[in-house]
Length: 377
Image (cartoon, rainbow, N blue to C red; front, side):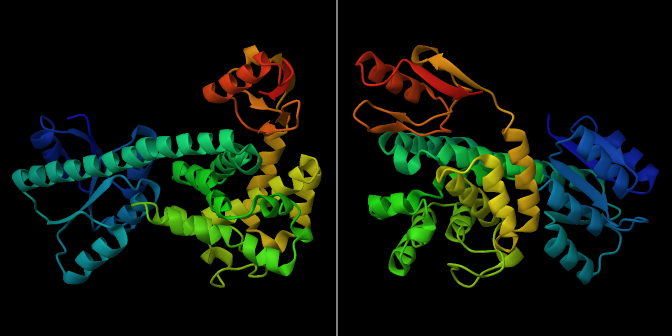
């Protein structure tokens, strides 16, 4: 089998015995303490399964498996202990989310059976992740691209939001980047239920009347309700629902949720969307960031710090004028693209995709746009 298994026990003789009897069936690594196990998982992973003894010095098995659950959630966790009391089993399941609980001494045959079952469980977990990250994500990306092409004024900012979301998440060392990117791509889906003039006016929220503001901020609830109907998208829907909530509880809050009770996706979206609104309103990146920082109580301070670092990095992109026929993936528009009669085709910040490149080329060949376009790369 290609799946790797890590055995952790402070008794080297036990590790040697398991290695000798199981090495022909499984790809095994061993560690004699929790710290060594975490180091091996970080350097030699991913591991499909970890089997840990309960009673070990400095870091016991429960503490180790709880940490593994946080840092390597796809690794299936098995507890091995000679202390078969009920509370140990309860804690192992509730805190370490343990797949199986085995008593020492555990003969090779039941250990091998458990490892085979754990590997199958790992395959189910990774298969579901592949479905979410590839199949579902690909479908969402296709939907997002169609929306950008058909209504760039409303959805043209989606890719910029996604790019900033990914950069901030990486700066904060967050997991499930794909889920956060999906949140960014779908956060404006509720706009389809709003009048276009209201969406346009909302680029400057201070101009909205109280009635208009109440109507506009319902878009997050509408999008959340739509997305929540898709299996496995409940957490994504929740982040989208609370995207307008302020960290300190002020503003157009839904359900009075605030602070760290807000999903991290919602806290990221709040800073990113406000930054984009300020830029759309005419501020450059430095002034838009300064405006965020002047209202710091509205945002999660950790998000604001990561976002400031992200803007410093993203501002280093170069701008170059190229021919429409020379557009390639990896570039992004550095300007809005309008037809000669004023129709918006694509927004500043949109990445060059195959479909967008073909669309712009067709409009240029028909004489509706200029040949030269400013892009970032």
